[in-house]
Length: 206
Image 1 (cartoon, one colour):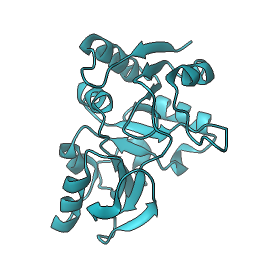
Image 2 (cartoon, helix red, strand yellow):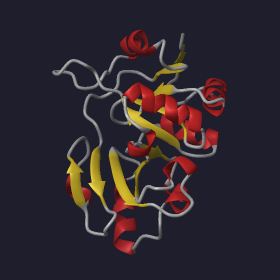
Image 3 (cartoon, helix red, strand yellow):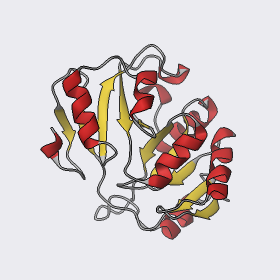
């Protein structure tokens, strides 16, 4: 049964943040708020946790295209090849914000992602998400949680999320109502921006 932990974005309780990070470090799965929809995430370095998410999503880990949720742009050089000035300017304009940027991966990717040529980078404009990553010390691998209702594509109510996911994850964070529009996905892996999916977020950043 998942723990249900209330956190306020304006001032996330440090003790509760530490509890969630402890769960992540021990290979647990966490559902947490972002600046768009709620995400399902785990520690990027924990293979068993990654496999659990792959099983829940019904895909093979090797084929998964999940986002790396980072605290800020300083994480970029850990996982992304050197990028040009114009690409970096787009990232600076857009982040933190409701965007996922596909960028060329480097040779330092964690073992489970070594074969990936590109990675999706997210820096949400949500203090809970960024504080979790900072406290953890490395990115959280994340995927959006879908609602089976065709009308409401994403689950927005934390209590309903708990009801549905309590036997599949270790923590559900109540960070208030989420959005039901996912992030805008922009491929910058070849330098020129390509819109993969238009979601929340203005394309005026390009």
